[in-house]
Length: 71
Image (tube, rainbow, N blue to C red):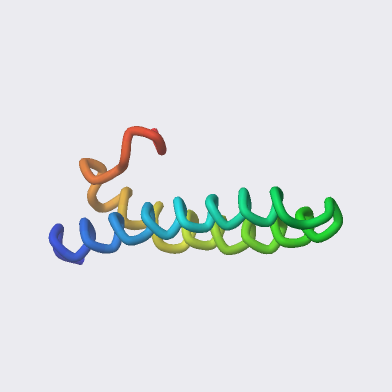
């Protein structure tokens, strides 16, 4: 993968991760604990897949792109 493509995907994944985190905060503040835990667990699966299947391979090939918060 070219560095430009890897950077664009990394930026998108970081942005999507932030949006998913925000969605968890929204559900936590508006729904009961059972619904919150169910939602959080579902989003956790998405974020784990993003990290393991997309982001880590990119950062293995392009370590300079790895954001400081993931180091």
